Length: 343
Image (cartoon, rainbow, N blue to C red; front, side, top):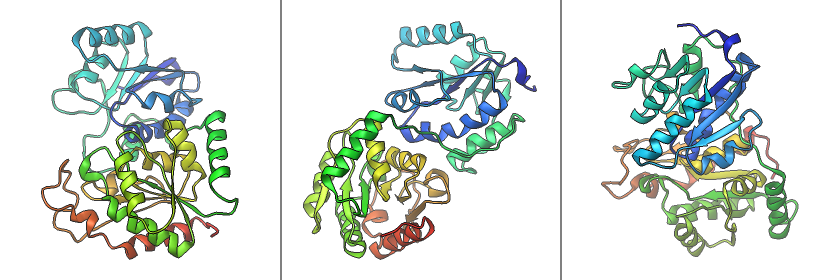
């Protein structure tokens, strides 16, 4: 089935899960605007990703999936059907989003050809799993549909109020020429999170080698790890205040570099253009690492259980605890060199 581009007036993108997953899906936005210049684009997502999406110029409306009981799901299906979308991209493709897509009334329904869900779609993205980086998978999806792809940009926008908040915080906390490295201990799974003692070693080594100032950015569930890092460090560090997602993004945008786990803040950092180093254990950096050539990643590649994808480590978290700090600093050197960062 070939899409009649001129007939497309309303598009819906469906993407659930974490902030990082949603950010990676925004790689399609500039391409969709070029292919369908007269169409409005909406999103169906979950909190708190709506905060990021509502700021993007390419997006008209953001629908939230929040009521997970039967009546809430039925109401959402009715709401989407009333919107009369011409084209739906189901980038999540779980059983429920397949149902939404199938019952939407859209002429063009695109999704992944996964077992038990193919019935919902008449256009299909790639079948291969684990072949493409998560952002590139969305690009391949568009190519499968015969759409023109000219952009690989992730999209994230910071509003003026959040930008002012971050600038005022930096002005009060650092000197004008300070080399500020951000540290983010966030992570969606316990096994993805680098241990505080290792983060403290990395932060201390960075502070010593580059005369850097360290800022720890954190979100809900990260405060204990943040306090443990600060309590273990030998160097002085600054703990960011409580922020919402956009304010955190704005703080990261003011850093010269961010060192982070595979997490939402890591993908936020890449989307706003802050050179990013990600630390990986159970996840594959070739699939989930920081997107774009200006960034770097590291893992303990010689470990027998590396890229295990387990939510809980069955061993002793060697993927992080045995990570060589000198190797991490060498990656920071790479970031500085290839991004022409002035110390």
